[in-house]
Amino acid sequence: MNGVTRRQVMAGLAGLAGITPALAQMPADWPSRPIRVVVPSSPGGPPDLILRAILPKMQPLLGQPIIAENRAGGGGLVGTTFVARQPPDGYTWLFTTASHTNIPPFNDNVTYDPVRDFTHVTLAAQNFGQALIVHPSVAATTLPELIALAKRDPGRLTYVNAGNGTASHIPAELMKTMTGTDILSVPYRGVAEGMTDLLAGRVDMFFVGTQIALQHVQSGAVRALGITGARRWTGMPEVPTLQEQGLAGFDVVNWFGLWLPAGAPAPMVGRIHAAVATAVADAEVRQQFASLGLEGVAMPPDRFAVFVADQARIAQEIGRRVNAPR
Image (tube, rainbow, N blue to C red):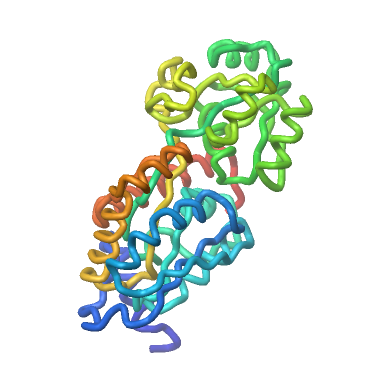
């Protein structure tokens, strides 16, 4: 077929139809050997902590070891690209964050489509949003005061950008768009470097994970102005959401999902989803998630596919707004 594989043709037709291609049958003995879950980020991050909680509950249900494998690099591109190129036989999974849909509009090196090139298994967990924190030198104690400050002196305020398409970048650019403010993006190689400069007062604000923010808020080193999710976080119940402070519809949370390569059979996907659902409903897992500022979800595969497509569309829109290279 002139170098085009049957799988590529099926994927292309499925993309036109808005569905994910599926193999006709699942092997009767699946799984018959260990399964690997690729995490496209460095060890020790939230995806690893989530997997550490749920995999021991899933393994007895599937009858095989499930081994997490970190393949970091390229802001998640290395591991994600690797999984996209694997056969859809159920022995290689991808577990990652909202960066799955958020990174592609901001990186010309992406060779996969986050919707078309994967079988969508489940949204496993999500947080309550990012915390908007500022250095104490910033003369604002609420979001409206911060917006007023930004409008009085356009381009003076700065924010930590720990990578285009990340959970520090997307909510900041969305806030700027919704409020018509000019706040300067300051790029960093990661969260740790950005936090160091925020604490030192070299940058003004940062959208960062609630658990990371909490220790610095409690010490008085930073001030929390809002939460990006639709609900307040129980760890900082006194901090209102951005919606409560006038940004209607602002709901940006970091989420964690599970995928297989495109073409995985529906019965296999159903078994994996059922195992995840059982794991996140476990009392011990719920307690571990709560300590991480997370809640288990176990969204069904069909709803997750729609969710991922919607998140990819939103990321594309934000990418266009900030003139992402394309």
